[in-house]
Image (cartoon, rainbow, N blue to C red; front, side, top):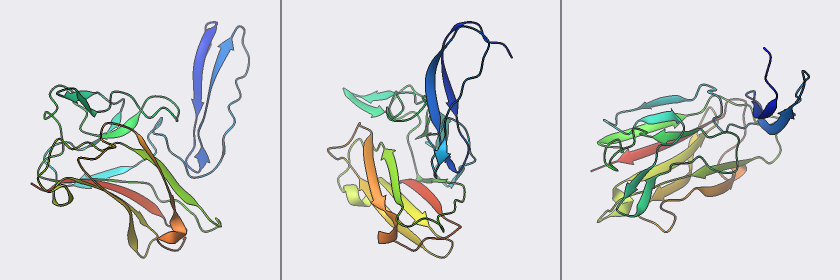
Length: 200
């Protein structure tokens, strides 16, 4: 395909590699080279086959550009992706927009699970991610809405972070880094899952 002269954003990605994204000005036919390096990485620019399960009646995990919602003056659902990755897509629990209660997680749990990835040749890997968790109110936050980030190695599952609310990090993308060996051994059949639960 030919591209008209101009400035464009280009992104390249492959499961098992870190995505690359560049801005390039095209003035004449030629080649655009986008370096990608080995690593287990997903910024959700492309759909690499994460799966969704659970029994929640609304607010199911969706892949797309976040549609913001606001509770009074507080940003509940983000209206932008995390700023540290390529493109503008993320996985969001409910993305219909409108009222803050229109597509929130209700009456159960929605679970997002990664494709299998191989860490058997890694020495000391870390799980790095950015998360957004908003809870409107709760008399007992620890027993009500929760976000649980877990890692699985083919034999065992361990929770790497439990998030409840309301909290000081409501309404923001929060970067998190966890050393995987602090939780379980490495294998060729690793997976990450993120479960959001509305218990009342």
